[in-house]
Length: 282
Image (tube, rainbow, N blue to C red; front, side):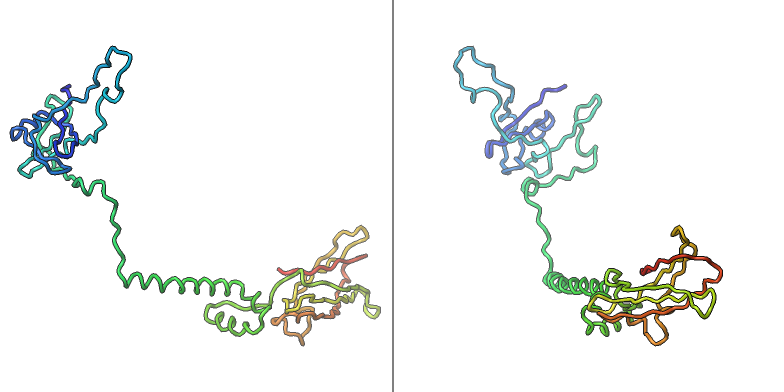
């Protein structure tokens, strides 16, 4: 393997690794890719081999070893004629080949090689559109959140219900009464046999809305049990079945309101000893 050779630019003191073929071209005249100084590469050859340590105990450490330099590849050297003086190494009998035997080498200039990346400035129109888009996006986000929580907002702020109703007419959604099972309770209930009709039961109950705003009417689950409190039969009652025809269940139970329920249940095919009554939203 050929010994590496180095030459130093007399202008900026940058050291380059060079090949014998570079030094043979144009009598060794090369141009520094850093400061553009033209110099004789043969006349400024240097060695970077470490200097031998002196036998004396006291020595100058700075005087030993290779100097601290900026080492550049031979690709950074240019020919004085303006054409790049570039060689490439490859495996094989021939140590180097000329540029005309390979694809052209595209090198970035030294000034641009270490320069910071220059970002393209946005046009004033693009910047103005970006600034205008920010409040529009925020407005769209607020509108989306309002539509998602429309039932809560309509319950707490009744004046907004017509606004949400108009928006849902366009978006294909509905504004239903708020569902909050924690705001509802069964204050009292009773199940008795109808003395006038054998096998007929009378269910009496009172539903109460403890919230200050309307809540959706719940479903009722009536379970008849035997003497061991095991379910015998279970039935779910929708609001339209227990609220009666005079109540608009779509508007919900008024805030702080109550509803008295009285239903006749046909239990002639069962034998029961007790019952359970729950309310829930399906």
